[in-house]
Length: 308
Image (cartoon, rainbow, N blue to C red; front, side, top):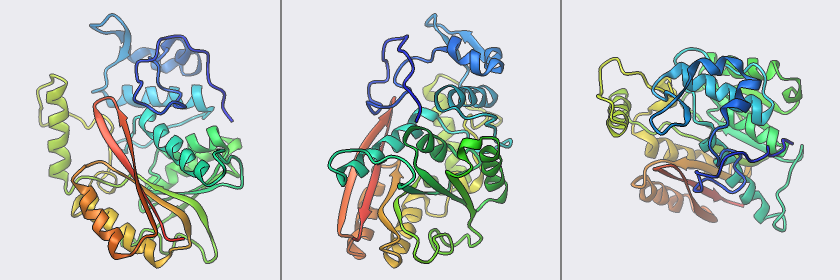
């Protein structure tokens, strides 16, 4: 289990989970020690503090590589060009809220180690959720993906880290129309399933969302503006958007109600909640709750349900 590094800068991300290791300003001098190549992307910004250009995909990737190495002991992290490079602090938050959920059923104590098994739907080429969860809590993970390149990338990251060989397994979902089916083996039971679903309905929607983000940052949207966090089709959009994807997930979970003690998913859009709530009512979920979480100005929530 990773240790919390010595505090150097005052906390400035107080809306993150209390156990999140990224609540403080990035200490680039410490990050350079583990990942020297990050230094080429760091400069003093207009607030007179060191930072990177978050519109530069290569800079974002270098920062992620450094964070995963420094805080979680992950060596050789990398992803293929164009694949999703997620912000680490937000991903860590989800893991910590899952830990709190598990503690509720364990006398308030977070269960750690090999006895906890987590299913990550759509783990991606980055494999970030399993990397963080295995490092911080010692949990076992099964990560799934429909994309062969993404699954291969995740497997390669694990291969480069001996401490993860027995902690993380990657399974390719050969049936793109299914989420749990053909992934969960007969008799297999997970403590929690997690998912960060594609929340755009189309490539056009994803492009528009990116342009809006650039405008908020004072950057004029252009045709060649990159998606700074990247992302392939199955990572960013799904017909009907996140509401359709989560509705399908709920329907499938009802067909395998005992396969996960808790089913969870991120919900990015507030207007999605009434839609998925109706889906949960339809399948008669025994227990449903919503956990609020935020990163900067971005507000999200974790939808949680179970049948047992």
